[in-house]
Length: 378
Image (tube, rainbow, N blue to C red; front, side, top):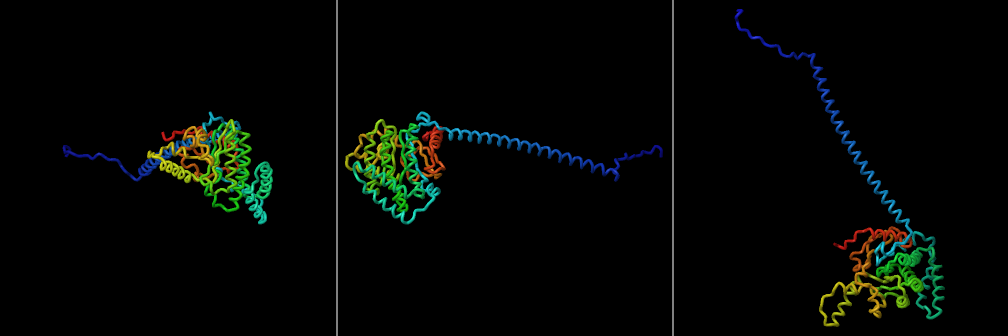
């Protein structure tokens, strides 16, 4: 049997129960390593995200600080901008917020007796005397008028008129050749009757003051009204007198267009009707041009008698288009003002009410306009 072929089986690895803890430890080590690796990746991602957020925060903070400093520099600037610096040849203003300002700052409510007296005084202005006695009579009437509305909500309108007087001087200082202001829209006729009476009376008093101011400062005052027939006769007569007188003031430093009983939609409609009437009375059948229609805009209450002279007021039809429109009191709409003329007008909206506006606010608005990229559709 010694030569007998024998097969020997090699002993294999022994998996005894004593080796199980080693395998468990190895598995736990692998799991711990994987978890550590994931935590390291997460940490790197978290650090990277935090770094990105910090960079964004730092850049945003620097940008806000730069804007704050720039705004502060502009708001603190007191030196008027010249025409070469701002480039605005025609400024339009919607003087909004007078009533709101009056309500917030009023300290008394007129009694029934005072309201009746105010109504009677407003009606009496139609009896304006002529000649040398006019100036003294107007001063007396205004003194009584002021005593009745002062410290009431209606006084906000008077303060708005005072601001307009100051604002015209600001524009002269900043070499703005033309200013157009929205004083009273045709929609304003629907306001309470006493408020309308006060507004119309204020027009009478302030137009008389503007008459004297225009001579001192060399101002050409033009009154634009698309529904002049709704104005009291004595107010319309005064408007025409002031406008005719101011035509002779030289040197002319600024032209101020005061829009009273005005509607932008009615202005366009009236312009079209005038051009249609011209076509019907002539053999001309050519289409209406942009220049013709533009030439019918911003017609004053006396322009029909001074067509040749008024042709020089606007050196071109485009000059009727304001480069910049300023609206106060936080509202952001055009409110039927200069609808045709404002095709490429830049807008600046100010939170302050009109009586609160300062020279700094005008400087800031002109500065904003100067920085904008005016492509005019190109």
